[in-house]
Amino acid sequence: MSEAISTTVILGAGQAGGETALALRQLGYAGRIVLAGSETHLPYRRPPLSKAFLAGQADEASLLIRPADAWEKADIDVRLGVTATAIDRAARTVTFDDSETLGYDHLVLALGGRVRALPVPGAQAPNVHYLRNIADAQRLREALTPGRRVVVIGGGYIGLEVAASAIKAGASVTVLEAAPRLLARVAEADLAGFFATLHRDNGVDVQTGVGVTAMEQDASGNVVAVIAGEKRLPADVVVVGIGLIPNTELARAAGLQVDNGIVVDEFARTSDPAILAVGDCAHHAHPALGRRIRLESVPSASEMAKVAASVVHGEAPKAVATAPWFWSDQFNAKLQMVGMTEGHDAVVERRLPDAQGAAVFMLFYLREGAMVAAASINRAQEFLAARELVGRRAVIDPARLADATTPLKTLLAELGPTA
Image (cartoon, rainbow, N blue to C red; front, side):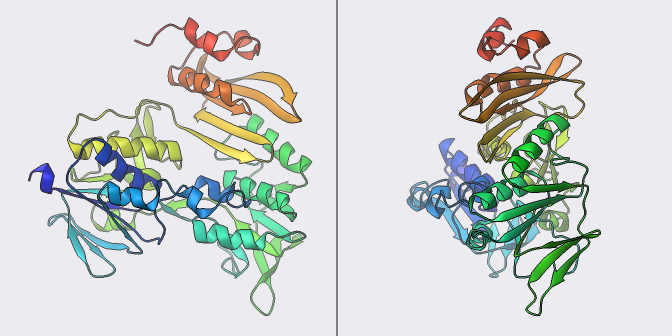
Protein backbone atom coordinates (compact mmCIF):
# COMPACT_ATOMS: atom_id res chain seq x y z
CA MET A 1 0.00 0.00 0.00
CA SER A 2 1.47 3.39 -0.92
CA GLU A 3 2.11 5.99 1.72
CA ALA A 4 -0.35 8.44 0.09
CA ILE A 5 -3.28 6.19 1.01
CA SER A 6 -1.89 4.53 4.14
CA THR A 7 -3.58 5.11 7.47
CA THR A 8 -2.00 5.59 10.89
CA VAL A 9 -4.36 5.41 13.86
CA ILE A 10 -3.11 6.82 17.16
CA LEU A 11 -5.03 5.77 20.26
CA GLY A 12 -4.68 8.34 23.03
CA ALA A 13 -4.93 12.06 22.35
CA GLY A 14 -2.63 13.16 25.16
CA GLN A 15 0.79 14.71 24.72
CA ALA A 16 2.49 11.50 23.53
CA GLY A 17 -0.20 10.76 20.97
CA GLY A 18 -0.47 14.35 19.81
CA GLU A 19 3.27 14.73 19.36
CA THR A 20 3.43 11.47 17.40
CA ALA A 21 0.84 12.82 14.96
CA LEU A 22 2.64 16.16 14.59
CA ALA A 23 6.03 14.46 14.17
CA LEU A 24 4.62 12.35 11.34
CA ARG A 25 3.57 15.44 9.42
CA GLN A 26 6.88 17.17 10.13
CA LEU A 27 8.67 14.18 8.59
CA GLY A 28 6.53 14.51 5.46
CA TYR A 29 4.17 11.58 6.04
CA ALA A 30 1.35 12.03 3.51
CA GLY A 31 -1.01 9.30 4.66
CA ARG A 32 -4.16 9.60 6.73
CA ILE A 33 -3.68 10.24 10.46
CA VAL A 34 -6.49 9.60 12.93
CA LEU A 35 -5.85 10.75 16.52
CA ALA A 36 -8.51 9.37 18.87
CA GLY A 37 -8.88 9.98 22.60
CA SER A 38 -11.42 9.40 25.33
CA GLU A 39 -11.12 12.92 26.78
CA THR A 40 -13.00 15.80 25.19
CA HIS A 41 -9.97 18.12 25.26
CA LEU A 42 -7.45 18.59 22.50
CA PRO A 43 -3.96 17.24 23.37
CA TYR A 44 -2.59 19.15 26.35
CA ARG A 45 0.33 19.18 28.76
CA ARG A 46 -0.31 17.43 32.08
CA PRO A 47 2.62 18.63 34.24
CA PRO A 48 1.10 22.11 34.87
CA LEU A 49 -2.03 20.48 36.31
CA SER A 50 -0.33 20.06 39.69
CA LYS A 51 1.69 23.27 39.36
CA ALA A 52 0.71 26.49 37.55
CA PHE A 53 -2.81 25.41 36.56
CA LEU A 54 -3.71 24.23 40.06
CA ALA A 55 -2.31 27.46 41.49
CA GLY A 56 -4.49 29.52 39.13
CA GLN A 57 -1.49 30.85 37.21
CA ALA A 58 -2.39 29.16 33.91
CA ASP A 59 -5.64 28.67 32.03
CA GLU A 60 -6.86 25.75 29.96
CA ALA A 61 -5.83 27.31 26.64
CA SER A 62 -2.22 27.60 27.82
CA LEU A 63 -2.07 23.84 28.40
CA LEU A 64 -2.74 22.93 24.76
CA ILE A 65 0.29 21.61 22.88
CA ARG A 66 -1.15 23.23 19.72
CA PRO A 67 -4.14 25.54 19.15
CA ALA A 68 -7.28 24.02 17.63
CA ASP A 69 -6.66 25.20 14.07
CA ALA A 70 -3.17 23.62 13.98
CA TRP A 71 -4.63 20.12 13.81
CA GLU A 72 -6.82 21.03 10.87
CA LYS A 73 -3.91 22.71 9.07
CA ALA A 74 -1.83 19.55 9.60
CA ASP A 75 -4.70 17.44 8.19
CA ILE A 76 -4.91 15.36 11.34
CA ASP A 77 -8.33 13.83 12.00
CA VAL A 78 -8.80 14.40 15.75
CA ARG A 79 -11.62 12.42 17.31
CA LEU A 80 -12.37 13.23 20.93
CA GLY A 81 -14.65 11.55 23.45
CA VAL A 82 -14.24 8.10 21.90
CA THR A 83 -12.59 5.04 23.42
CA ALA A 84 -11.13 2.05 21.58
CA THR A 85 -12.67 -1.20 22.74
CA ALA A 86 -10.90 -3.82 20.60
CA ILE A 87 -7.97 -4.34 18.25
CA ASP A 88 -8.17 -6.97 15.53
CA ARG A 89 -4.53 -7.54 14.60
CA ALA A 90 -5.29 -9.95 11.76
CA ALA A 91 -7.69 -7.54 10.06
CA ARG A 92 -5.72 -4.48 11.22
CA THR A 93 -8.78 -2.72 12.57
CA VAL A 94 -9.74 -0.86 15.74
CA THR A 95 -13.29 -0.78 17.08
CA PHE A 96 -14.54 2.13 19.21
CA ASP A 97 -17.29 2.49 21.78
CA ASP A 98 -19.42 4.36 19.24
CA SER A 99 -19.39 1.14 17.14
CA GLU A 100 -17.17 2.61 14.43
CA THR A 101 -14.35 0.45 13.08
CA LEU A 102 -11.21 1.93 11.52
CA GLY A 103 -8.60 0.13 9.48
CA TYR A 104 -4.93 0.88 9.96
CA ASP A 105 -1.56 0.25 8.39
CA HIS A 106 0.17 1.36 11.58
CA LEU A 107 -1.34 1.65 15.04
CA VAL A 108 0.28 3.73 17.78
CA LEU A 109 -0.82 3.11 21.37
CA ALA A 110 -0.45 6.25 23.47
CA LEU A 111 -2.95 5.09 26.06
CA GLY A 112 -1.31 6.65 29.12
CA GLY A 113 -2.35 5.46 32.54
CA ARG A 114 -4.85 5.96 35.31
CA VAL A 115 -4.40 6.95 38.92
CA ARG A 116 -3.93 4.23 41.50
CA ALA A 117 -6.87 4.26 43.91
CA LEU A 118 -6.33 4.14 47.64
CA PRO A 119 -7.52 0.66 48.75
CA VAL A 120 -9.60 1.71 51.76
CA PRO A 121 -13.34 2.36 52.17
CA GLY A 122 -14.23 5.98 51.48
CA ALA A 123 -11.43 6.53 48.97
CA GLN A 124 -14.01 7.48 46.31
CA ALA A 125 -15.88 9.98 48.47
CA PRO A 126 -16.93 13.30 46.86
CA ASN A 127 -14.20 15.31 48.61
CA VAL A 128 -11.42 12.80 47.83
CA HIS A 129 -9.45 13.99 44.82
CA TYR A 130 -7.20 12.22 42.32
CA LEU A 131 -5.26 14.32 39.84
CA ARG A 132 -4.85 13.07 36.28
CA ASN A 133 -6.74 15.35 33.90
CA ILE A 134 -8.05 18.88 33.45
CA ALA A 135 -11.40 18.08 35.04
CA ASP A 136 -9.63 16.68 38.12
CA ALA A 137 -7.47 19.79 38.40
CA GLN A 138 -10.40 22.17 37.99
CA ARG A 139 -12.37 20.42 40.70
CA LEU A 140 -9.40 20.39 43.06
CA ARG A 141 -8.57 24.04 42.38
CA GLU A 142 -12.11 25.01 43.42
CA ALA A 143 -11.70 23.01 46.64
CA LEU A 144 -8.41 24.63 47.70
CA THR A 145 -9.65 27.70 49.53
CA PRO A 146 -8.21 29.56 52.55
CA GLY A 147 -8.57 27.77 55.86
CA ARG A 148 -9.46 24.37 54.48
CA ARG A 149 -7.75 21.35 56.00
CA VAL A 150 -6.08 19.35 53.26
CA VAL A 151 -4.62 15.88 53.72
CA VAL A 152 -2.37 14.69 50.90
CA ILE A 153 -1.81 10.93 50.80
CA GLY A 154 1.43 10.16 49.01
CA GLY A 155 4.77 11.95 49.25
CA GLY A 156 5.82 11.69 45.60
CA TYR A 157 6.27 14.61 43.25
CA ILE A 158 2.56 14.97 42.44
CA GLY A 159 1.59 14.97 46.11
CA LEU A 160 4.28 17.50 47.02
CA GLU A 161 3.39 19.80 44.13
CA VAL A 162 -0.26 19.71 45.20
CA ALA A 163 0.78 20.42 48.80
CA ALA A 164 2.77 23.48 47.69
CA SER A 165 -0.17 24.79 45.65
CA ALA A 166 -2.57 24.22 48.55
CA ILE A 167 -0.33 26.17 50.95
CA LYS A 168 -0.20 29.05 48.45
CA ALA A 169 -4.02 28.96 48.32
CA GLY A 170 -4.14 29.49 52.10
CA ALA A 171 -5.06 25.96 53.13
CA SER A 172 -3.45 24.00 55.95
CA VAL A 173 -1.76 20.86 54.65
CA THR A 174 -0.65 17.50 55.99
CA VAL A 175 1.29 15.09 53.79
CA LEU A 176 1.19 11.40 54.71
CA GLU A 177 3.79 9.05 53.24
CA ALA A 178 3.80 5.35 54.07
CA ALA A 179 7.51 4.95 53.26
CA PRO A 180 10.20 6.03 55.74
CA ARG A 181 10.91 9.18 53.69
CA LEU A 182 9.46 11.31 50.93
CA LEU A 183 10.08 10.53 47.25
CA ALA A 184 11.18 7.03 48.19
CA ARG A 185 10.64 5.59 44.70
CA VAL A 186 12.00 8.48 42.63
CA ALA A 187 14.77 10.30 44.51
CA GLU A 188 17.66 9.45 46.80
CA ALA A 189 17.88 10.49 50.43
CA ASP A 190 19.77 13.81 50.10
CA LEU A 191 17.30 15.26 47.61
CA ALA A 192 14.31 13.87 49.48
CA GLY A 193 15.62 15.44 52.69
CA PHE A 194 15.86 18.83 50.99
CA PHE A 195 12.22 18.69 49.92
CA ALA A 196 11.05 17.49 53.33
CA THR A 197 12.74 20.51 54.93
CA LEU A 198 11.42 22.86 52.24
CA HIS A 199 7.84 21.77 52.87
CA ARG A 200 8.12 21.90 56.65
CA ASP A 201 9.65 25.38 56.44
CA ASN A 202 6.62 26.46 54.41
CA GLY A 203 4.12 25.13 56.91
CA VAL A 204 3.38 21.63 55.60
CA ASP A 205 2.99 18.95 58.26
CA VAL A 206 5.06 16.15 56.70
CA GLN A 207 4.58 12.73 58.27
CA THR A 208 6.49 9.72 56.99
CA GLY A 209 6.20 6.06 57.84
CA VAL A 210 2.45 6.58 58.19
CA GLY A 211 -0.02 4.43 56.25
CA VAL A 212 -3.69 5.29 55.87
CA THR A 213 -5.99 2.61 57.28
CA ALA A 214 -9.45 4.20 57.02
CA MET A 215 -11.54 7.22 56.07
CA GLU A 216 -14.11 8.59 58.49
CA GLN A 217 -17.21 9.83 56.63
CA ASP A 218 -20.21 11.95 57.59
CA ALA A 219 -23.86 11.30 56.74
CA SER A 220 -23.46 12.87 53.29
CA GLY A 221 -20.56 10.58 52.44
CA ASN A 222 -17.81 13.18 52.61
CA VAL A 223 -14.59 12.31 54.39
CA VAL A 224 -14.21 14.26 57.62
CA ALA A 225 -11.04 12.60 58.90
CA VAL A 226 -8.24 10.37 57.67
CA ILE A 227 -7.24 7.55 59.99
CA ALA A 228 -3.55 6.63 59.88
CA GLY A 229 -2.77 4.04 62.51
CA GLU A 230 -3.55 5.66 65.86
CA LYS A 231 -3.80 9.11 64.32
CA ARG A 232 -7.04 10.84 63.37
CA LEU A 233 -6.48 13.76 61.02
CA PRO A 234 -9.49 16.06 60.41
CA ALA A 235 -9.90 16.81 56.70
CA ASP A 236 -12.03 18.98 54.45
CA VAL A 237 -10.17 17.93 51.31
CA VAL A 238 -8.25 14.70 50.67
CA VAL A 239 -5.84 14.31 47.76
CA VAL A 240 -4.50 10.88 46.80
CA GLY A 241 -1.29 10.65 44.80
CA ILE A 242 0.07 7.12 45.13
CA GLY A 243 1.09 6.28 41.60
CA LEU A 244 -0.07 5.46 38.10
CA ILE A 245 -1.33 2.23 36.54
CA PRO A 246 -0.47 1.95 32.82
CA ASN A 247 -3.45 1.31 30.55
CA THR A 248 -2.52 -2.04 29.03
CA GLU A 249 -5.84 -3.88 28.92
CA LEU A 250 -6.49 -3.19 25.24
CA ALA A 251 -3.00 -4.36 24.27
CA ARG A 252 -3.21 -7.46 26.45
CA ALA A 253 -6.59 -8.42 24.96
CA ALA A 254 -5.03 -8.10 21.49
CA GLY A 255 -2.28 -10.54 22.45
CA LEU A 256 0.57 -8.03 22.68
CA GLN A 257 3.34 -8.57 25.22
CA VAL A 258 2.65 -6.71 28.48
CA ASP A 259 4.90 -6.39 31.53
CA ASN A 260 4.47 -3.25 33.66
CA GLY A 261 3.37 -1.56 30.45
CA ILE A 262 3.21 -2.47 26.80
CA VAL A 263 6.58 -4.01 25.98
CA VAL A 264 8.41 -2.26 23.13
CA ASP A 265 11.94 -2.20 21.78
CA GLU A 266 14.16 0.87 21.56
CA PHE A 267 12.21 1.93 18.46
CA ALA A 268 8.79 1.85 20.19
CA ARG A 269 7.80 -1.34 18.33
CA THR A 270 5.61 -3.90 20.07
CA SER A 271 5.61 -7.64 19.42
CA ASP A 272 3.43 -6.84 16.37
CA PRO A 273 5.45 -4.93 13.74
CA ALA A 274 2.39 -2.86 12.75
CA ILE A 275 1.78 -1.62 16.31
CA LEU A 276 3.89 0.79 18.35
CA ALA A 277 3.49 2.21 21.85
CA VAL A 278 4.71 5.48 23.40
CA GLY A 279 4.34 7.45 26.61
CA ASP A 280 3.31 6.33 30.08
CA CYS A 281 1.89 3.01 28.86
CA ALA A 282 5.12 1.85 27.18
CA HIS A 283 7.79 -0.28 28.84
CA HIS A 284 10.68 0.27 26.50
CA ALA A 285 14.28 -0.72 26.02
CA HIS A 286 16.38 2.38 26.82
CA PRO A 287 19.87 2.28 25.26
CA ALA A 288 21.19 5.16 27.39
CA LEU A 289 20.28 3.26 30.56
CA GLY A 290 21.12 -0.19 29.25
CA ARG A 291 17.88 -1.70 30.50
CA ARG A 292 14.12 -1.66 30.18
CA ILE A 293 12.10 1.03 31.91
CA ARG A 294 8.64 2.58 31.92
CA LEU A 295 9.05 6.33 32.27
CA GLU A 296 6.30 8.71 33.37
CA SER A 297 8.09 11.66 31.85
CA VAL A 298 7.01 14.27 29.30
CA PRO A 299 10.50 14.61 27.73
CA SER A 300 10.68 10.84 27.37
CA ALA A 301 7.22 10.71 25.79
CA SER A 302 8.21 13.44 23.34
CA GLU A 303 11.40 11.64 22.34
CA MET A 304 9.63 8.31 21.89
CA ALA A 305 6.93 10.03 19.81
CA LYS A 306 9.61 11.16 17.36
CA VAL A 307 11.13 7.68 17.24
CA ALA A 308 7.73 6.08 16.60
CA ALA A 309 6.94 8.62 13.87
CA SER A 310 10.21 7.83 12.09
CA VAL A 311 9.38 4.11 12.15
CA VAL A 312 5.91 4.70 10.71
CA HIS A 313 7.31 7.03 8.06
CA GLY A 314 9.72 4.34 6.98
CA GLU A 315 12.99 6.01 7.91
CA ALA A 316 15.90 4.25 9.56
CA PRO A 317 15.01 5.10 13.16
CA LYS A 318 17.44 6.32 15.77
CA ALA A 319 16.85 5.20 19.34
CA VAL A 320 16.69 7.76 22.13
CA ALA A 321 20.31 8.42 23.06
CA THR A 322 19.84 10.88 25.93
CA ALA A 323 19.38 10.08 29.59
CA PRO A 324 15.80 10.63 30.85
CA TRP A 325 15.06 13.89 32.60
CA PHE A 326 12.16 15.68 34.28
CA TRP A 327 11.36 18.69 36.46
CA SER A 328 9.26 19.75 39.43
CA ASP A 329 8.24 23.14 40.82
CA GLN A 330 7.60 23.41 44.56
CA PHE A 331 7.48 26.72 46.44
CA ASN A 332 10.63 28.64 45.42
CA ALA A 333 12.51 25.55 44.26
CA LYS A 334 12.74 24.44 40.66
CA LEU A 335 14.11 20.93 40.40
CA GLN A 336 15.57 19.61 37.15
CA MET A 337 16.86 16.07 37.21
CA VAL A 338 18.59 13.88 34.65
CA GLY A 339 19.56 10.20 34.77
CA MET A 340 18.74 7.55 37.35
CA THR A 341 20.31 7.59 40.81
CA GLU A 342 19.87 3.89 41.57
CA GLY A 343 23.17 2.13 42.14
CA HIS A 344 25.19 5.30 42.75
CA ASP A 345 28.04 5.01 45.24
CA ALA A 346 28.94 8.67 45.75
CA VAL A 347 27.21 12.07 45.80
CA VAL A 348 29.01 15.36 45.08
CA GLU A 349 27.34 18.65 46.02
CA ARG A 350 27.95 21.95 44.22
CA ARG A 351 26.43 24.72 46.33
CA LEU A 352 26.08 28.40 45.51
CA PRO A 353 25.00 31.28 47.73
CA ASP A 354 21.23 31.36 48.16
CA ALA A 355 19.59 33.74 45.71
CA GLN A 356 16.82 35.91 47.20
CA GLY A 357 16.17 33.31 49.87
CA ALA A 358 15.99 30.38 47.44
CA ALA A 359 18.43 27.49 47.69
CA VAL A 360 20.79 27.10 44.73
CA PHE A 361 22.75 23.87 44.40
CA MET A 362 23.42 20.81 42.28
CA LEU A 363 23.94 17.17 43.22
CA PHE A 364 25.97 14.80 41.07
CA TYR A 365 25.54 11.06 41.47
CA LEU A 366 28.53 8.86 40.63
CA ARG A 367 28.97 5.15 40.14
CA GLU A 368 32.56 3.93 40.04
CA GLY A 369 33.59 7.51 39.30
CA ALA A 370 31.22 8.03 36.34
CA MET A 371 28.35 10.51 36.51
CA VAL A 372 25.03 8.63 36.22
CA ALA A 373 22.60 11.34 37.36
CA ALA A 374 22.41 14.99 38.36
CA ALA A 375 19.88 17.14 40.19
CA SER A 376 19.69 20.91 39.91
CA ILE A 377 17.83 23.23 42.27
CA ASN A 378 17.37 26.73 40.81
CA ARG A 379 20.39 26.30 38.56
CA ALA A 380 18.73 26.03 35.14
CA GLN A 381 21.59 27.74 33.35
CA GLU A 382 23.92 24.81 34.11
CA PHE A 383 21.41 22.01 33.67
CA LEU A 384 22.00 21.58 29.92
CA ALA A 385 25.67 20.92 30.57
CA ALA A 386 24.73 18.50 33.37
CA ARG A 387 22.50 16.58 30.97
CA GLU A 388 25.36 16.11 28.55
CA LEU A 389 27.78 15.11 31.30
CA VAL A 390 25.37 12.42 32.46
CA GLY A 391 24.76 11.32 28.88
CA ARG A 392 28.49 10.86 28.44
CA ARG A 393 28.91 9.23 31.86
CA ALA A 394 31.68 11.71 32.44
CA VAL A 395 34.48 10.95 34.88
CA ILE A 396 35.54 14.21 36.56
CA ASP A 397 37.53 14.92 39.70
CA PRO A 398 34.89 15.28 42.48
CA ALA A 399 36.71 18.31 43.86
CA ARG A 400 36.27 20.12 40.56
CA LEU A 401 32.63 19.09 40.36
CA ALA A 402 32.05 20.59 43.78
CA ASP A 403 33.80 23.87 42.88
CA ALA A 404 31.03 26.25 41.83
CA THR A 405 33.57 28.76 40.46
CA THR A 406 34.30 26.42 37.55
CA PRO A 407 31.35 26.39 35.12
CA LEU A 408 30.07 22.97 34.10
CA LYS A 409 30.46 23.95 30.46
CA THR A 410 34.20 24.31 31.10
CA LEU A 411 34.35 20.79 32.52
CA LEU A 412 32.36 19.59 29.53
CA ALA A 413 34.68 21.29 27.05
CA GLU A 414 37.69 19.67 28.71
CA LEU A 415 36.26 16.25 27.86
CA GLY A 416 36.62 17.02 24.18
CA PRO A 417 34.16 16.13 21.39
CA THR A 418 32.17 12.92 21.49
CA ALA A 419 33.32 10.05 19.33
